Amino acid sequence: MKVKKAFRFRIYPNKKQITFIHKTIGCSHFVYNYFTGKQKEKDHYWHTVNEMVQNGQLLQNNWKGAFFNKNKAIKAVRELKKNYPFLKEVDSIALQKAVENVNDSYTRYYKNQNKAPRFKSKKNPIQSYTTKHVNGNIAVLDKHIKLPKLGLVRFAKSREVEGRIINVTVRRNASGKYFVSIVAETEIKYDEKTGSSVGIDVGLTDFATLSDGTVYENPRFFRKLEGKLAKAQVILSRRQMGSAN
Image 1 (cartoon, rainbow, N blue to C red):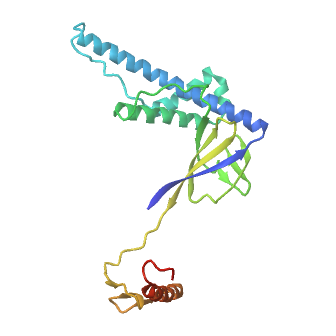
Image 2 (cartoon, rainbow, N blue to C red):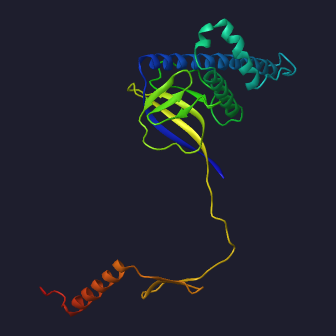
């Protein structure tokens, strides 16, 4: 069975890498806000036409609008780069991921699972962007992590990353520190069921006796404490209530 696990580490980018992180965050937000704005225009038009139907100005709302088309939007990013050349400077996969985030937000919105998507703000103290693992562009080394466009970034490796890396989120928190959150897919193996059953008898002499004859002895520390308990119970039984003994 495959499961996804998250690993979070603090990174220590140099000045050049910090500048590029900020630029990638800004471009990702720009793409997210651009396509969110386009979809908001479509939704607004649909609601306007729907109000005209309710007011009797139109017989019916023939313009059903269009749900967000992720593949069409990703292709549109190429045209967007022609009009906004600064988008060419950053990780293209991060821009693609921004489009996917718009798609996820609107999918949940149209299913009434959350509120309408909002624009990304520069004033938010926590800023981030996400990129995907493609053709070895992301790798965890001994003291560095390899990230698209950033190269090798020094990081505090507190544990091993298990499994196949899927995506990485680079985040700057409110205090100005930088972190990466790595999502990896790993395989979990479960013991196969044999279909057989066994009875267990828990006792004082032996810790447990199974119906198949297997005996688990009481551990030594248990027998030692059991002896102390017996002595204490004998002493307690000889004492009289209210006496100083």
